[in-house]
Length: 491
Image 1 (cartoon, one colour):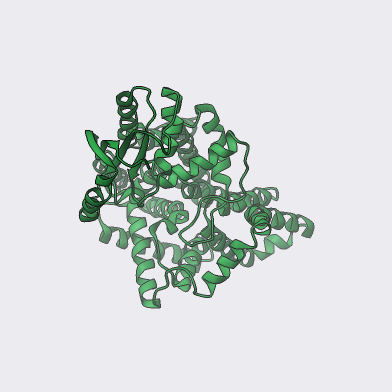
Image 2 (cartoon, helix red, strand yellow; image 1 turned 135 degrees about the vertical axis):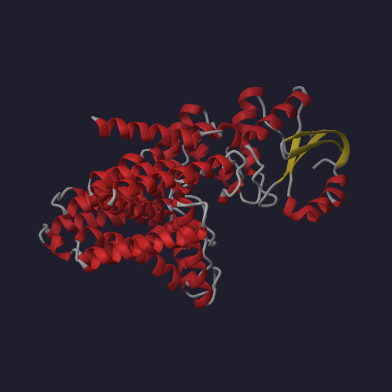
């Protein structure tokens, strides 16, 4: 009962830390607008999709599982992005329970509890939970995949089936996971071959087909309908015709720096050097366990090594978000180290855990309210959902039920989808109509601050916007400035 109450308390705490100020600070940019237009098509127009959002490589997409998970909260809330984000935050907060059971099966109950505590406070885990996108789902799904696999090698045959399902779902939320986890799964198969040999070959084949089917099924159907677009893009990527290629030295350096940076933001965000030392100690502990042939540590070694080796081998440009599936591993490794200290001196283990919680809570308090060091809006930390809604409200109140059109300055440039969606989901619902694309006498130019490209923005206002009409009114909400123009030449 104490464990249950502790986990429920940690779940509530994890949720509160992740949802804090989100209705005001939610980042809803062009990419979110594109995603929500697709979800709207599924819910409202019953137009299903076989692929998810695009990746950084042309012609390659994530799977659509994120869209279909969003359907229920979207339908219930009539497309309110805050409610949809709330739903995904709850899913990520449930990782507190998942990682407890994973830690418990690896190192015992105390390891599970320590891991659950760290995950609840982890700054990087909090940041990912607040990102309205598909990659954050890799955190709970990666935990579940390894949990079910551990149960399988501990004698539960049916859990291999559950591992296959979570394997497929994990690969659906981020395309890169397909490469990572197919290789990880192969490594697990080789290392634990004797456990697979004990199973009925038909059952093993069923699990294999299920995992592969969930992973690539939608991609296969999409390719058949679209002249093998994804296959051709993959071949082009492998051949070096697309993507951002770097030298081996640059790749190793980039992978190493990104890995330490993500580990630091997950465990000890106040010190990069301290995090480096901590990770090296954890790897030494892991290596010692491997040398002693303790089987529970083999999957952790494969989980850590294979994605990093693949990223180095790929020699492509590295983004920090490539390491999202390792966040749970970093937490487990840290929990094992703290448990090791606890066994030798309880007070040292308690101090280590308390220190990690305090520094993460301090970082959360210092950075989250202002959106500083939040990677997915690093170029526009001041762009807040509440200011967007206030802007839309003022436009409708100012125009007083007359038709109008709008143009927005966005980052990335000239992507209107975020604003278009909000005018539909919020503006139309509250005021009864949406902006029109032409023949409107009033044009509202919505401009967000772009401090890194002030000259470019100034030239756009001077040389382009000034030709659209005569300015008659200006108002501002946060970093968003709106200029009302009387149209000279209808857009």
